[in-house]
Amino acid sequence: ETGVTQSPTHLIKTRGQQVTLRCSSQSGHNTVSWYQQALGQGPQFIFQYYREEENGRGNFPPRFSGLQFPNYSSELNVNALELDDSALYLCASSRLRGLNTEAFFGQGTRLTVV
Amino acid sequence: AQKITQTQPGMFVQEKEAVTLDCTYDTSDPSYGLFWYKQPSSGEMIFLIYQGSYDQQNATEGRYSLNFQKARKSANLVISASQLGDSAMYFCAMREGGYYKLSFGAGTTVTVRA
Image (tube, rainbow over all chains, first blue to last red; front, side, top):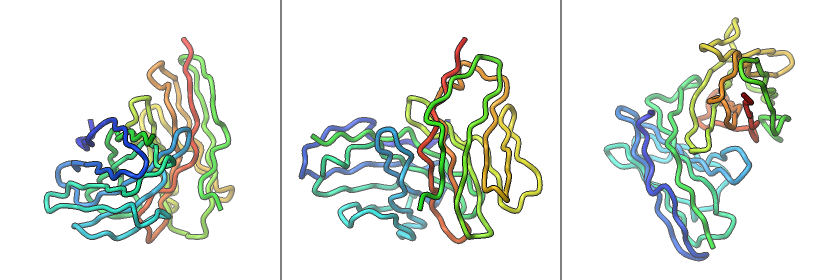
């Protein structure tokens, strides 16, 4: 058990709506990353937060935004949902930032947009 | 360009036998790290093994070993003595020096038969 928890586990939203996904990092971890995993594909990096600041972003539009709180928990917000946003959203936390830093993943939130 | 290529979409292996999962990568950065993750149907990504670009020896972790061939840019995962619980999706990923994100391949599904 990694200690990274995500909520909710499943979610169904309508196109055009907004959604907030939550992640509780493993104790002592100050870095959190979010990934989108479409069905049958590998995860794609959305962005990373370090000490409450976004310090890296993948090829995702601005309607994907996030927050990291002082306790290092995090939120992923997606506005104006599109059908293609249907995916498994994974949160990963780590204690350090380095080449060999192991990222601990949560079980994911499966979002379905209808 | 695809940074991580996994060419085997699915593999079957008999219980107690070994299986090799292929992974090739593309980077011009001399400093990088290679990871393998296991993703069971529950969705959580489980870290298996890490290999750094400057590591002289192939990494091993229990039944997992990494066949690192730097000149060929390949990092194949070998699972020895397969168990039924090894049935899952396996992802190869890379983190390049100076970057924070993991770049994942498309994954390989492994099914272990009794």
